[in-house]
Image (cartoon, rainbow, N blue to C red; front, side, top):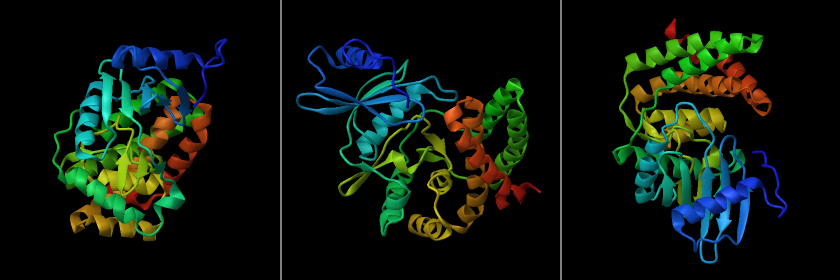
Length: 295
């Protein structure tokens, strides 16, 4: 995440936005002691220390296929479950969020595969999916892939034409998955290790902007390709979650669709810093055996 322009006081201009958000949503007594930018691919997120509290303020960037009002509703729901951060205030129209900081450490690829961790994460996902908590919004991977393909077609570069061509194969997989059928459960839908915070005995999931009802195995498939997990860790995750034979059939095409979706998102963004991500995900997609499921 890039820092904004600095003002004469040495803070970024966005620090002033954070202060304004706190005054507007929490009141004039919410005066920051410190404001520290947190890493992120899309939104501007800040850790804010008050005299007697530790908060996070999220200033959203424009994002296709994100329903900000649904995000707020779903954050409130997972906060009550103890799976997500406790939301303190929000602007449902813009997507500005203020929530209590989760005082733990985010997972990375190495910590995720330590003994017992994928099992803990599987239990957390089971708790979310089995809660049947009503989630707002709609998650449609096929619709998103079509949207990114349209953006790429409009760009007209060689890379964008190649990406748009791959989108057709991904859409065939989406149709095949629809034929296989799946339950709809509350899902995170953007489960990368950095979105999992180890808070003592608990795992807390953050960044719920794509949360919506979905095939619950999407969360397992997404984690497997974005971590990435090796075959042994994937097996442990599936076994701990309790994937049944029907689910085991869905997982390979789900993983392939996750690769395509993220690769097309990164490519369509046009951002230089995401070029390597786009190349990696789309290259892995072209080599993924599950692409042949539709043939």
